[in-house]
View 1 (spheres, one colour):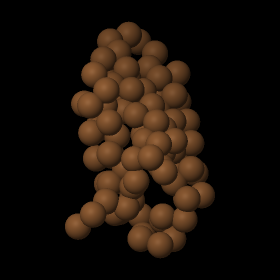
View 2 (tube, rainbow, N blue to C red; view 1 turned 90 degrees about the horizontal axis):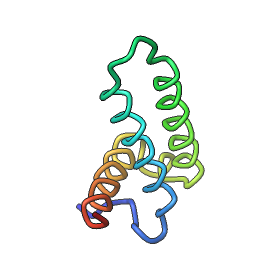
View 3 (tube, one colour; view 1 turned 120 degrees about the vertical axis):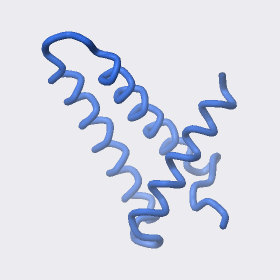
Amino acid sequence: MASVIDPQRHAHLIDLQRRVFEADAELEAYTGDDAEPLREAVRQAVLAKDAALVETGLIEEHGHYIPRQDLKRAARDAGSSSG
């Protein structure tokens, strides 16, 4: 089945998803005592990505699962091809 995420048309979504991945990786790597600012950064990144995803109409058209999974896949693919 083809992805509902088009890399050119949805580049902004892919960028937002990559920011979520980066914020989450930073939180996972943190070894200090107060991770709350990092947790908040993850929450904010997720909220921004989710709002943008809803704005595209993909959630309404395909439900929540497929667009979110396709977006994660597209962001991972974009990350591996840009490195």
